[in-house]
Length: 339
Ligand code: NAD
Ligand code: TDX
Image (cartoon, rainbow, N blue to C red; front, side, top):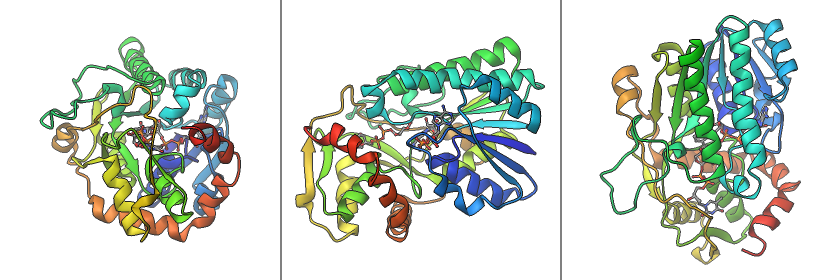
C-alpha cells in the first residue's frame, strides 16, 4: 500500500510513521507536513533514508499542490493527523484552527474523491464530546455521546468530524474516524502538559498548574494510539467512529507531582496560575467498541509509559532544547509571563 500521512512531523503522526514503517515494511509512506512551529524534521530523522519513505513539505489547505501529489503518488489511503492541536493557542488565535482543521480536512477529502474514492481516516479527539463532571466517575464518552465542544480547537475538530461523515453520506467516501484521549510519549511538543513539566523541572523552572490542578485527563501512551489507528485502517468498518482511550484518568496535579518525584525535584516548583478559559473538567473514554470489534486494548500501563517518556526526554535533550530555545520563548512569555 501507498499511504499519505499528514502531520507526520508532529507528535502523534511522527510516532505513527515510525510504528507503521516497522510493522508494514512492504508499504510506502508519504508524509505531508507544512512544518509549522509544531513540526520537527528531526522527529523524522530516523526514517529519512528509508526507501519506503518520502517527506513532502506541503500545506494540506494547498489544493493545487495536494492534487498534484495525489496525481503523482496515487495513494491507496490517507491518514489525516495534520492539525493545529493546542487548546491554549486556539483561545488566542482561532482563525488558523478553522483553516487547517476544517478547510485542510475538506481539501484532503476532495483529493481522495478526485483520485478514485481513496480510503480516508480522520484522527480526531475526545474533546469533541466536551467534558464530564468531576463528581460523576460513572460517566464516560461513548461513540454516541453528543458532540458538545468547549474551545475553538475542539470546535474545529468537531466541524471536521461532521464534514468527514457528510462526505461519506453524500459522496460515499470510505472513511473512518478515531477519537482518542490525551496522548503522551516521545516527541511530544513541550507546550503540552507532560513535556512542559518535564522540561521545566529539568531546568528548575516554575511548574505552571492551571487553576487548582484538579482537572482530569485520560492518558494513553502514544504507541497504543498508533496501534489503534493501524487496526482501524486495515480492519475498521467503513463509516464508523471508534473511541480510543484507556481508563487511565489522572488529575493534572498528580501528574505534575509524579514528574517532580521521578526527577528528584521539589514540590516548591509548583506555581498555581490563572485557569484556562472554558477549561474542560474531565475526559474519560469508554473503549468498548474498539475492544469488542477490533480486539484493541491499551498495552502500556501509565507507570511504565511515564518512566519511558521521562527517560526519552533525558536522553534526547537536544530535540527539545532546540525547540525551547527558539520562537517558543516568545510563546512562553506571552502565555505564562503575567499569568
Ligand atoms: P502536533 O501539533 O504535535 O503536530 C501537528 C503536525 O501537523 C505538525 O507537524 C504540523 O507541522 C502539522 N501541520 C499543522 N498544520 C498543517 C497544515 N496546514 N498542513 C500540513 N501540516 C500541518 O499534534 P499532535 O499532538 O501530534 O496531534 C495530531 C492529531 O491528533 C491532531 O489531529 C490532533 O487533533 C489529534 N489528537 C491529539 C491528541 C493529543 O493528545 N496530542 C489526542 C487526540 C487527538
Ligand atoms: O502549563 C500547563 N498547565 C496546566 O495545568 C498546560 C500546558 C496544561 N495544563 C493543564 C490543562 C489541561 O487540563 O493540563 C491539562 C492537559 O493540557 P494539554 O497538555 O494542553 O492538553 P489538553 O488541553 O487536554 O488537550 C490535549 O488532548 C486532547 C491535546 O493537546 C489535544 O490536541 C487533544 O485533542
